[in-house]
Amino acid sequence: IPRSSALSKLRDTQATYHPVGMRAVAMLMAAASVSALRMGGLARVRSPSISPCMVIEPEIYRECAIYDFEMEEKMKRLEEVVVAAKDAATAANNQMERVATEKSALEAALNQQEKKLEKLSLEVADEREETSYLRENLQKQAASAAASAAAASSLEIEVSRMLRQLDDQG
Image (cartoon, rainbow, N blue to C red; front, side, top):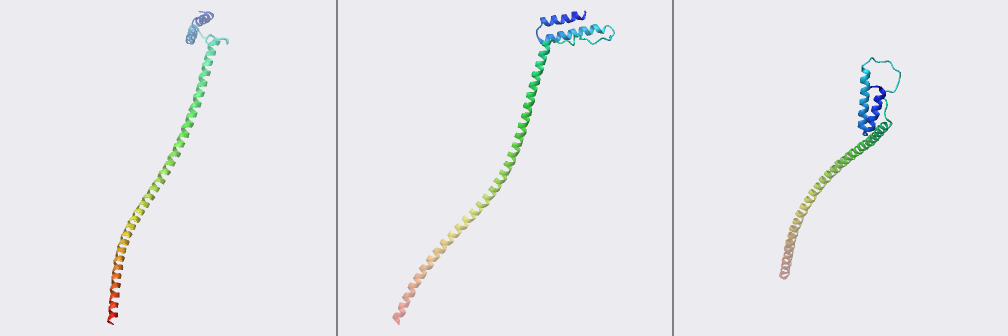
């Protein structure tokens, strides 16, 4: 098969099959056919020319270029999203560390306040106990003082009566 007929078959095949995948298969088949024809003989030194493998239909090239460009754009956006997600994760980790530090400090302060409250509660309980004890003693002393006052009053009455008797006797 001469080169020009292989190329025309390739183009005819591309004209009948529209999907991009079929075009690529047709190009590969044409390249394989040309390669198989050349393998039969010795390699010749040739002048630089365009082989069927090097010819790319402009439409296919545009489709591939657009596809690659779109994929590249998507990858760039994805990389930006990944970077933003990493930054957000780092910020969240830093914030969690700060919150954990604050929580530890607040728990330590709370424990200290609880100990202080417990100490003050014990002091209040001791003071109440002492106040109760002092009230009881005060009540006892008041009762004793009242009894002493009553005894002193009756003793005074008795002394007054005895002084009168002595005065009467003379």
